[in-house]
Length: 419
Image 1 (cartoon, rainbow, N blue to C red):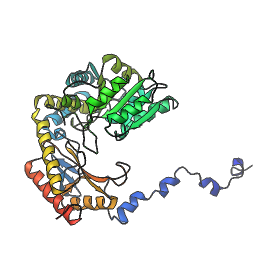
Image 2: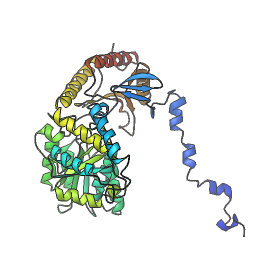
Image 3: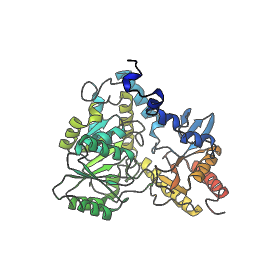
Image 4: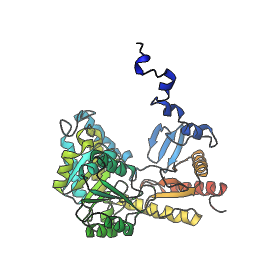
């Protein structure tokens, strides 16, 4: 018998139809965007150099209004020097997971300081913010538990939920409630058995809409149904609250059972943490698969995050400046006639609606020296395509004047706003 006969007589051509990689060869959406009707490709642009609010792309200086570096700390010399010093002391990698040889004194020192900063008993650092949500949420949810997620929560929240469901053989019941709606959350919670374990997960500041969770109302509903609250503060810490401590400071009271945040935004680094009661954090520490089975944060990133945290504590004028910028840009965009929807933070979406018009708007801004982010479905609902602008505390008033002048001119030229 030949090798070709051993598979039951299937021909090579028939077998080719089941090639796992065929979908990769057939994928043309990115190419259509690059050379088709749109004429250019707006994603994966390689940045050659960063100088504070300036990004260099293809040899051109662009004013960056698309970064999540909200406090400008990734550019701060104190943060950079802390990273360099950590490399000199510890090397470039921990070369192991937190569970084994990958925990440094830097981890434990940073965790203690983070717990104090957000007003919780304990904190636990993961290698990325994504892994924080993946590991913490999946560790907490068990068989027959119910989880309730805002419909526009970050993708890492949903991936943490679905990972948990996969681990528990689909026994976890997943509910998605209307965006920032305590009333719809109440409806969803009412559908779950009274004796079931329940977790409500929400962003503090929503990453595309730029609005703030109605935490007091949401928590009141959750408590009434015996549910715990998990608060993702990725876009909130360093951004809102009088001293930048996030949503709980913004509302004036500690309401969430668990607080999560990433280091890739206000902290100017990469990594993430979850904070809460000591026993709960310890449980996540011993059950979070993305912590146990992944290499730990590199020393440079730990030191950078710790230096950034220290600056946040000592310089509360940074988040206050950021909040002033946010209020100004929202006010100015509304006056020009742009639709910014529910924005109330330094994340200010300019909602265009049509995908191609959004890409044209982005390209015109890019050509004029402004870098923002075009977002279409599934990043946002269909017909809600937008330009996501986001601001840093280190933006100057002159730079903001320039942004407004260019965006207004492009918006009028493309008919997005009136003359």
